[in-house]
Image (tube, helix red, strand yellow):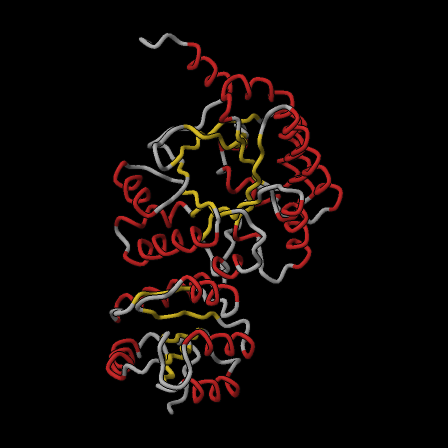
Length: 392
């Protein structure tokens, strides 16, 4: 076997289709170092000696001596930090659950699969396995704290719609910081303080505003008074703040408001036992916690195996890609089926056209939001619209 170049990721691929393996080696050898086997047990023997070299493991579902899921389960125990991908023509619901919960696969690709599609999937997995956080020059948590001191922030309501009939089913409460947003994006603002006590202060301030405005939410939304609220992993792992999150949920429920929490996928690690314990406590209290930006990283499927999240919200880039990217389209369709079989809700954000909405309806998405359906606006604006004459 050739000496592996350090510049090329090492891919262990197991498939009994020798033509596919030959095409992969021939076409992709300049980008990746492929180690290919037709027999799963032989591949495991190689992995046991080379687990530190492998960057990705790909296995076909059907193999002569060892099926793909059994192979990937053993590979997961042998090399838990190496991403796993399953190739399959048809996967039953039982096999899907086993692939997610036990084999902890990162991606599932439908066969027959072309070399081009496989290359795109490999690059996507490898590129997102080590996300790079873009530094924000000049922005500090203390600047966010100063904005809070000046009360230089406010909330807006992003409408949420049932996918079945596009009827309003709730809102997401978003924060705006006008002065800071003249220089920085709102995502950059939250990123710089997401692992800092400032995020707890900001979130608690937003919760106080929501408690004060609860009667107005109830009057405006009626039976659709369902609010989605973003929380950070740092906040949920702070014991005092976790208690505050639970108390806020109870206070809002007493005011006729239903609260759902959302946490970004990039902040959730399957190995973060402290965070998973907090998420479990919320579940035991009947409080829904969703994975936001689902599909933006490599933990997507592995997070579902814990069965402590109430649902997912698809990443906006993933949603945008369903009209042009085969992999994004296939993944969204497949994960919608998985969520349906697991009894999880699945929302999609970033809906920017009617064609995207129609395709997601076909796939069985339960909820949507995006500028095409309705843009965020302050509560005052919502109330003014609700009270305006129909002719206006």
